[in-house]
Length: 209
Ligand SMILES: Cc1cc2nc3c(=O)[nH]c(=O)nc-3n(C[C@H](O)[C@H](O)[C@H](O)COP(=O)(O)O)c2cc1C
Image 1 (cartoon, protein in one colour):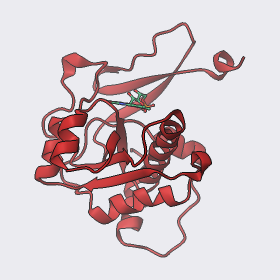
Image 2 (tube, rainbow, N blue to C red):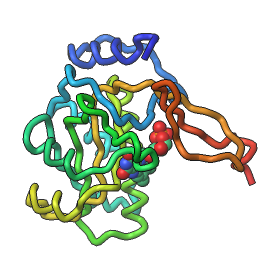
Image 3 (cartoon, protein in one colour):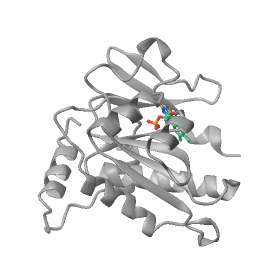
């Protein structure tokens, strides 16, 4: 980000700084919490960083407080390469074949359910992914939620004891992303112009009933 916000936050978190960090509004976090499909290769996400992100699951809401979600952490290496081969990014821009070479994500959180999938568990999944994504953003990292992945291959490769429902890719984003306010009758498909990724969001007046 141009204002150096993410870099400053990352430096503080990397250094394990105990100093009080400046208050960041939730609105700012929501704005920065975009789906990134390209990441910087010179930044390596560690197991500890992923664990801190997953730790939000010890504090969030859960239907009937069941807490049936389980998490497999994957950091840079052969396993991450395998995940990469089994996910689909940017399905609405197939001609771009995202991610671009040299910007592939290298760290992942595979989210599984230890109970048969239900509507309530799917809602828990959404709360979990959004919470983890916001936490990553606070840490100066970026994410993309992935539901388009090869479930059978991922289950077999990692010998997962439970069904994987989604994958969160984590890294330091290498893309310029902007929100674009639209009316409800305009296209909601994301698009790219001059290297900038635009994400249309329907304006408040059009979502109120
Ligand atoms: C449930 C869910 C599943 C998603 N699955 C994928 C996916 O498989 N691949 C992908 O590139 N993006 C995926 N996304 C990201 C969406 O495309 C993204 O949220 C949307 O384009 C809006 O962009 P934004 O997150 O920056 O607001 C998913 C998002 C959600 C909430």
